[in-house]
Amino acid sequence: MSYRPDIEGLRAIAILLVVMAHARVPWMAGGFIGVDVFFVLSGYLITSLLRAEIEASGRVDFIAFYARRFRRLAPSLCLVLVTTLVAAFFVLSPAETHPQSKAAGAAALWGANLHFIFAGQGYFDPSAESNLFLHLWSLGVEEQFYLVWPVLVALAASRMRGVMIAVAVGSFALSLRLSHEAPTFAFYMMPTRAWQFAVGALMVGTTLPKGYGWAGLSTVVGSALLIQPDDVFPGLWALLPTLGTAAILAAGGVSVLTHPRVQALGTVSYSLYLWHWPILLLGDRVAADVPEGPRRLLMVLISLALAAATYWLIERPIRRVRIDRPGRLVAVVSAVLALFSVGMFTWAYQTDDSYRQSLAKQLPEIYQRGCDSYTTDDIVKPCEAGDPSAQRTAVLIGDSIGMQWYPAVSEAFTREGWRLVALTKSACPMVDEPVYHHGSRDRFLLCESWRDKALDVVVAMKPDLVVFGSSHVYAFDDAQWREGSSRVMTRLRDASAHVVLIESTPRLAIDVFACLQSGGACGSPPDSAALSRVFELQRAVAGPLGVRSMSMNDLICPRGRCEAMQGGEIVYRDRQHLTAAYVKTLAGEFGTRVRR
Image (tube, rainbow, N blue to C red; front, side, top):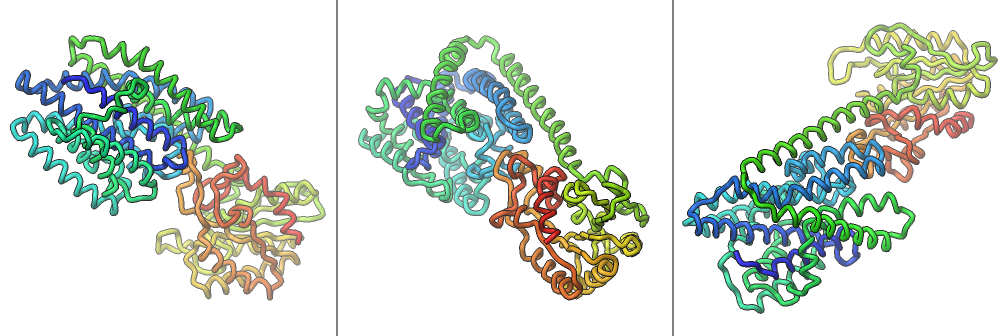
């Protein structure tokens, strides 16, 4: 096909819109529609090439087609993937690096869009926006389209236009429906984007008056100014950049698109697309002290320099290499990309397992000392800390939620010369009511037996202070919470003059590990309704019995949001349990509140 400089100019407009949006230019939040321009361009160019090949030889050489695609796209992609991962290793924390490697592995197989779909990360979600390879979703869509389109064109060469119209109509209808019902799927997936490629394909051989070119360019730029990230997209909104690009192609271009500087930007558009997003994100870390505006401008200039170097040193020389054995090229490149992908996923899952185990081990030390028998027996196994001959003794008793406060109690009291005794059994509440195993109708008789024995131990000990607590998620009704708690408090009050009930920890509505791994903002509002209900029921019986109640939840969930990480310290080790390291940081305030 003959060279069209206006198409290079269109590439420049598309990449400029995308970069401006990602650089957070205030009035260009809709610049992400530059990707839609690329989709229409791809449909036009690929169909033009395929049609020319069919007219010249009567068939499509699929192996040669994919060899040309690999030669065009793979070298620069591999460079950016490897370089970005190396930079991430030095700049990001291990918790943030792991999800990057998974996305890189998916991108190497042209499946970044599938990765973000299965990860449940929408394009504008905070957890996705921190991924260094988020922008590569569009390459996945393009390559998946390339798997299907040449076959359709070859099989329906004589009815090509009818096939294009059918694809455009069917895909657009699907996109309209799923943009409302499954917006993440509609945004990322090839079947809901194929209509944009098909519209571009329909412009092959279509001509419009030159004036339509200016109207199309105005529509593309106007849509970037008009469309916002919270609009339903693609849906009907995607018609604007799609039809605008189609008009430019059919009208034969616009003079401004052939300006030398516009052409220069279009020439490096692919490399700039690959580089700009990871450079912007990494720049936010390494130059965090630089004001946002100058910092982002600097990162864009660095991206542009890298793009130019990539084009002149890699893209341009490789594109000039003659492909004598396309089958071998496809096989070798596929093998290299597959090995890279397997390596990334293997490393990611191995380190994920290690990190998950490390997070799960953020337990109070008493669990390593064998003090918690859980479901194995009802033997009371006190764990002691501090001076055994101390004049004052504190007791901490409860299930795993109550016992998570051990590091704070230990830090607050043993340093002041107290003896500390911990009595715990996981999943065994300090509520004197029948208990059942989680998700089962089987009675947890070992819990009930252990609780009676543990309370006997406390009564016999006569400690100076008792701190106790349990989770609020047990399936008790209001009467059971009141009466069962009252019976336990009565026995504890008989043992000590100072008994303190500590409120249960709020549950998170997220998978903490997955959220931390995503590198995004991790947290959720507390399950305040259930939490407050149970605490109020317990406080109602605690007061008349002389039992004090306290809560640390204003520190765990400041301003009504429970964060998985605070001040560089991981707060939660699962949906409800706190990490031992974080609890220890609260020791001073815990001691103050217990003594009030």
